[in-house]
Length: 240
Image 1 (cartoon, rainbow, N blue to C red):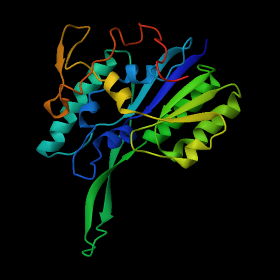
Image 2 (cartoon, one colour; image 1 turned 45 degrees about the horizontal axis):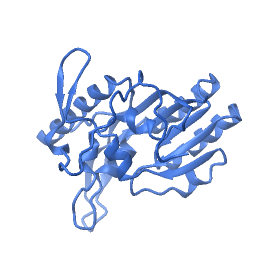
Image 3 (tube, one colour; image 1 turned 30 degrees about the vertical axis):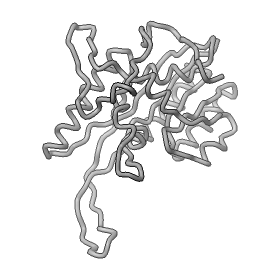
Image 4 (cartoon, rainbow, N blue to C red; image 1 turned 60 degrees about the horizontal axis):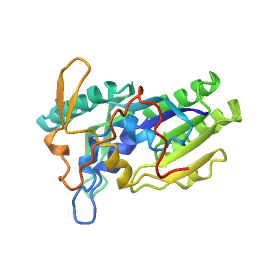
């Protein structure tokens, strides 16, 4: 039985779910209300055990009303996933100056997310050094993480990785990693891993899915009962 640890690149996945299609719609918006433990467990092979899920993310620093609302939704999602045993690792946003790429060339101030890929890389390598896992699940399409996976495999040659690309993403560089297999996340994976619209925490407090993330009834599908670190691996219905 393999000990499996999952590493979720939160912003890489978020931007995949937030992307607009050719008609200007966001077809995956409702799947932002995710149970990250259940999502990762879908990629665990029968007989293996999911030991930990690390979710790397950061709160946005926007001071506008929309920014504050986005941060509030994020806090609710963090609380819901911590309740399931997901381990949240924090990055941060840093103010930077940018220049308009259009004709105006005006310089403006904005923010860029920092430290997430570095933290993911450090966790992958540190836990490999500690022999904490023999199989890793990396949910990301960021090719900057290639060296981290390769170093982990050099630390422990028995380690194998499954690279799960978020919906709509491709990465040729990640696909060429010797010790990794690459697959694509599907709408079915997201639908089966969505949190129920009402979540009751261990404390008895109740969380509700933000209205911006509510799925149409025909698409909404709650995760299987007991999805969390105490349920054990259910295996993977559609992955080998």
